[in-house]
Length: 130
Image (cartoon, rainbow, N blue to C red; front, side, top):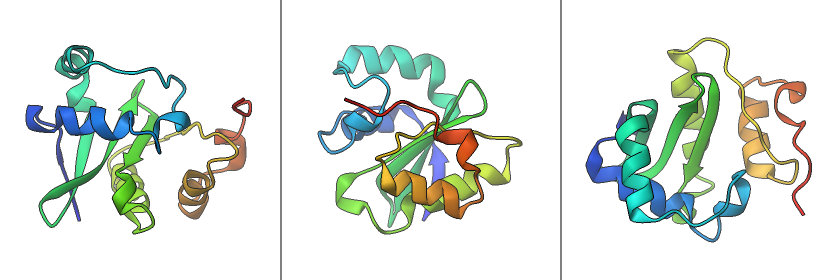
């Protein structure tokens, strides 16, 4: 696995897995994102994102919001393979104090952050989703 820059060729991949039915409920905003909205967002923010490649195929992304809040997403076909842990541990190497906001029922993300030493008080204060 490797993390690469989020160049324009990956912008649609980010939108596709971010809005995938198995992923979108884990984000604060789960509204649909149009291709045009994605392009405009990425023109400004793509430098804050990295793409995870597995055998040269994109399988996930990770980004920093507000310079210290981790956001990541793994393609549903590749979940359970350590991709989230790899991406978070890699981004931790080059950044200082980081935080993440995880819904209490998102067991996979909770496990990633706990295993990497994040404290519950940092990321469990989000109200449960209805």
